[in-house]
Length: 320
Ligand SMILES: Nc1ncnc2c1ncn2[C@@H]1O[C@H](COP(=O)(O)OP(=O)(O)O)[C@@H](O)[C@H]1O
Ligand SMILES: [Mg+2]
Image (tube, rainbow, N blue to C red):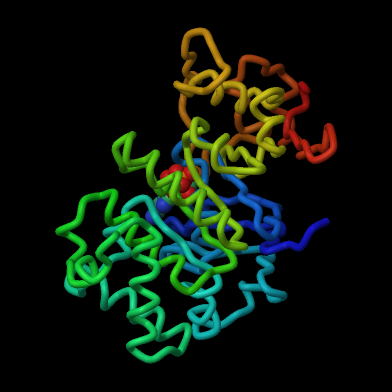
């Protein structure tokens, strides 16, 4: 196997709700190779963001990783203290979010925020940090970086903010970038531009990426491998081509049939009936059973195992 950038083993993340613990991520295993882009796909509420925040060490206060290992650069991130984690985050491990305003400071200029991160992590002087900030602002498509550096986030459009976020995430040349629905809030044309840019930057560097989206329509262009998540678990995983050509899990099939604009698909859009059950409302059996066209009585007996049905193709379904 080629070099591994990130390895997640048996990750279980809970949210503490009054006297209950709700498992929002429930036993996830995966790895991302060096230079590889892996997509994590699923409807809203499946646990994608909780997975990424667990890796980043940025869970909300009620959240806690209860079990598992997150191996990155030879260490288990879950064993690091706050200070050690802060050294890695924003440097070797970076993240961009759906809404850039949550990570941009409204009262600091873009330039200040960019150079602060660079100086902190790369230990450069001010001049070097400014040069690096200019370079990355240019690389994300601002021909006049000096001007953007003087701006405040609220004066920029959504697409510009997301490009600034990308420059910030990339400026310290991370080994792994986690992009959590980075273009979901953008207009379609701007979305395409930002995705193109991300793909280009990833290809030009040795960076690995975990690309999170609810939209299978963008996965084919972005990722090498896909993991489909449902109710806190991975239900299918394969390389991108296989997933689009020969999806196996009924949930994946449902997602494909309900996604507009997928190349090579035809016929009417068919939405998946029902909604994702919230954490704590999972039955004993397959969590997708009550929305599944193929479900049978035996599906509610126990949660199916994730089985390798073909080399590198994993499915969690007893009907396959
Ligand atoms: N702050 C929170 N408090 C309570 N429940 C939450 C909170 N954040 C997320 N959840 C719940 O955790 C589950 C997973 O959410 P999330 O990881 O955000 O899903 P996704 O990113 O796939 O849309 C959902 O059931 C969601 O309702
Ligand atoms: Mg999310």
